[in-house]
Amino acid sequence: MELISDNNSESNSNRIGSAAVSAASGSNNRKPTSAQQLLRENVKFLIEQLEAGHSETLTAYLNAMARFHNYSFGNVLLIARQKPDATHVAGIRTWNSLGRFVKRGEKGIAILAPVVGKARKKQQQEQATGQEGEAKEVALLGFRRVFVWDQSSTEGATLPEFGKTTGEVGGFLGRLREFVAEQGIELTYDASITPALGISYGGKISLLPGQTKPEEFGALVHESAHEILHKAERRTATTKTVRETEAEAVAFVVSKAIGLNAVSSADYIQLYHGNAELLMESLELVQRTAGVILGAIQPETEVTEIEPEAAPSAA
Image (cartoon, rainbow, N blue to C red; front, side):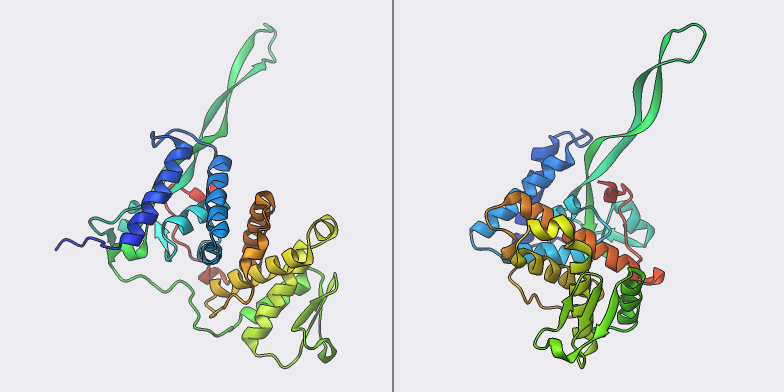
């Protein structure tokens, strides 16, 4: 039986995303391209959406960060732009090895994978002849377009659950506390900070006692983000609104990644005030910080991620 996707919005997203990749990489699938150029193209698209009043596009990008925190920032933008509801993506060979096959008619998600090879480098040979020669060394030559497919575009063998939780913090809160302690940050509980749920003092975090575990988890991630992100130069170079929004975005990404029913309590459009460079910097820092925290609190058995065979995370 032929299974063909009839999702018009998904098809439109694939068309837009593929066009963005093609514009940056050219029609040749193997032609190296500039990952930075593609990154700027997607940030430009995001800005256009924000200026048109579509702040949900930025929330969709943060959702993609939660699902694909092992991927590069540029590839997260590509996945979010083409298929915002993607959950697990991989190349055809990886899906086949797991006993699943791409449904006929399903379109892939275009991302970038690194092109690595031996680059020639002239050097003066240390020989008595004194003749010049050429040496080859492994180097990143550029990037090429590859395609991955979301789990929803495949059928076949049942996949294991990828470390899902169902709104319960479980052992994540304890591991987060350990992570905070390992960073040399003192954690205390102080009722006098009300109505604040948490406060970061620079080397010290105080939380409001009596919160539920999910609330405490979110507050601790938020304040940990402040401790990691907002020191010295960055603290003086950004406004309080941007700093609070960045910390809230990190808490949202981390909470969603471990399966909590996180709700965006801040309007993430505040990261953009007509400053494209600041928006790109903020989003990269949000992803990097969320990745550091998730890497510390996720048990090895729960970090299983379906990677496409082209290893796009290097992009």
